[in-house]
Length: 349
Image 1 (cartoon, rainbow, N blue to C red):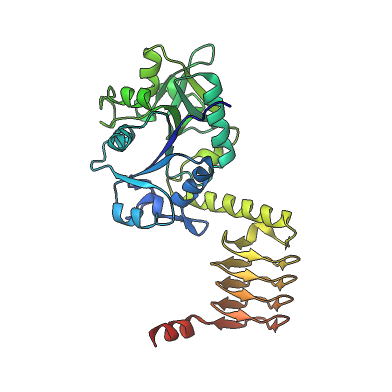
Image 2: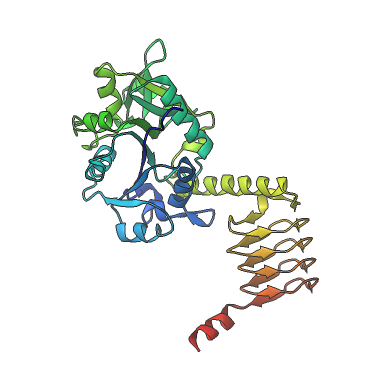
């Protein structure tokens, strides 16, 4: 059996995210009820990396605070000097590491583990020194363009602000995910300069450096562009929310849950739904709500940390928060049950 090459994943989460028009660090913004950084780490965890390093910088204390439930090491990028500089910040933590680096942006909440696994396999079987993930967009505005030769081999990645008109016309973009030998990547980063439009150390420059050294740079073309695109604005955040909600709904319907208008229904990842449940339009169920078997939730209902027994029917536009509803109960429309105040009073006694 072939020995597994050690794997280290570096997640870039130090940026401000100025296009979000918010003082809050970008990776802290919630998408489908969780910080977007959590979604990225959840896609990485099944890879079983030997170590996962999260690069923090802007609002580092707040970002670090949301990582208690994850087996990661935080590394501070003290100066915001580009993505290449961010990766170099982790070098001291990897002084004794010999293996493969996977570098991922922390603002891509739609990533799926299966595609990361496919990329790792493609890199391993190709014998390439470096593999980058790419995808094709009809409108590649704001993304780095992948420049290839007439045979389709990668030659460079050019950021939009540094691209000429011919390069801007390229539809294939850099998805911001890289796999390569740690020694080769850090060696290339040592030669990256800030001689560019933004005066920053571009991580993308390791591609042209590798090519210039005669190394093979491979590309893994992702078939679903929306899965790999970063969330850089509130519009993109809303799109990611819709996609994650749709995935969750497909999963629940495959398990037997009936949904009468899925695009309007939102069920959080920590919610448990029993067999035979029926959900009307515009239903929202969040927190750690537990719904029993054969329940009917009529349109417009909101449940948060609710515990609902079997055979319960909840009337339209009702709200149940931090409350237990016993088996076979029938709640009239517009019912409000909020146990939050009682729990707060008990905690202060």
